Image (spheres, rainbow, N blue to C red):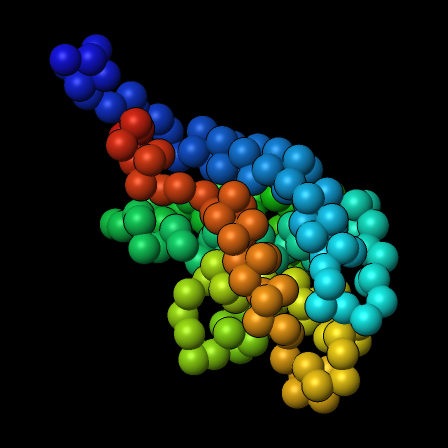
Length: 181
């Protein structure tokens, strides 16, 4: 039997949870966005490369945070979800050096956008891929068929969906290790 199981979960404060969440996702974005840029720029589905740059990650970061924040209420309850979301947005406003209320509204707008582009599906992972295609105007680089349909090529979406697994916070694993107090 492991020491982990003998002594139970490590207790962790909500503020620390918010710090870990923000730092982990920011680190994942910093390390992973260049891979996403490569997937997009080298996609055979495009007639010409979108020539996205690795420093064009602002919209991607907002998409990833909006999606991840939408998952919190599925995993945390008893107002912990609201408190932690509030702490995360506060910390993000410091990271992005912007007004907290303005950032909160931008994230809500991104969440609404993701739900809209992915309707009727409620799978947020797929919404991220469709959101990337929309926010970076990737439909403009597709062949006429998909451009006219105003819909991303399903093969591109499949590759992006697979890559998005790396950008979704794993609450189940986190909750196995920690008890939020």
